[in-house]
Amino acid sequence: MTENYQLTTLPNGLRIVSENVPHVASAAVGFWVQAGSRDETYEEQGLSHFLEHMVFKGTTKRPSPKQIADEVDAIGGYMNAFTDREHTCYYMRTLAGDVTTAIDILSDMLTDPLFPVEETHRERGVVLEEIKQRDDDPEDLVHDIFAETLFPKHALGVPVIGRANVIATAEPEHLRKLMAERYQGNRITIALSGNVNHDLVVEQIIAAMGHLGRGTARTPLALPTVCTGRNYVSEDTEQVHFCLGQRGPSHHTDDRYAAMLLDCIIGGSMGSRLFQEIREKRGLAYSIGSYVQPYDEIGVTGAYGGTSMESFELCLDVIQTEFAKLRTSGVEAGELSRAKTQFRSALIMGQESMSSRMTRLGKALLTYDEITPLDEVVSRIDRVTLADVQTAAENYLPKSLDDCAVVALGPFGDSE
Image (cartoon, rainbow, N blue to C red):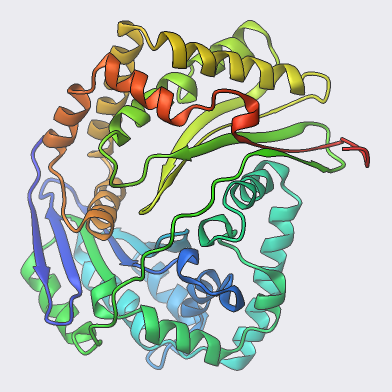
């Protein structure tokens, strides 16, 4: 798999990585900031996400959100952003000839936002409605409650969307303070993939963002206490939405590739054990699956699904039975081979998307301070053995439901 990327680090620590793909007519640009909900104090919970909303509300050069939107539409581009626990990303997809405009708009938004008082107060309402929407969506809400249950009173257990009372009182000065602390050179990585010229990109970004300070390094988190037990929340729903799991590998543990392949075998595909056993053989659920979510210090291994009240406990029993089989008997050679092929295919197919390529570059630099070549990633996957997956199962799959956190939203009634 051919890769052709260049990396430049400015004196203030800001990194620019671009991958030239000359045979395409488009490009993806991402401004990645090492700032997420994990960096927030209790009084700031939700401000990283709110700040992401507010940088779209106007700059000195582009005083209104309508002007920003019109300029993006004028080049036929698509712009959006997202915040998660570890970072915030502002990105745009454009034709290759419009990359200069995309960089101009994004750099302007991240260095000179106005944060007008009227727009700030108006956007409060938007984000408060977003919180209500999350609260009305049990399939989404259950994952937030699961994180809070697994990592109580810890930054990794706090919902990215934050607390309503923080958002309701957010003012421009709160956003300016957060931006001054975290949107500095050493915490910003700009990634591009497509038909782009690295030298021209670097020249433009130096002019637009070279003045930013270096900033301070992110403070590592203390390891959270991983809690177990059941947390059933009564909601007026047709289904029980549930999530269960325990700790998982971090970004930096050696067995993360084995854990990812294990996840694929458990519930990551239509051929996975949970999908076949719960949906195909028993017809207990429409939605069933598993995931591994690594963070810098620790990770999460979980399973999730939605089923009727009558089938809920049976689903839990089936999941625990499958976990026990994996812990005691391991996986079959054919299963591991198929999981490796799925992983390898996803990497290769991702190379056909400029957005996927850009995302891989940006996240790799933010997470590891280096970009592992795709051929090396494939080689590491290929080297995972049956014994490695067995060890990952023993490390990350609970011995019983009493050894993990189990969260469910459904019509349990007051007695639950």
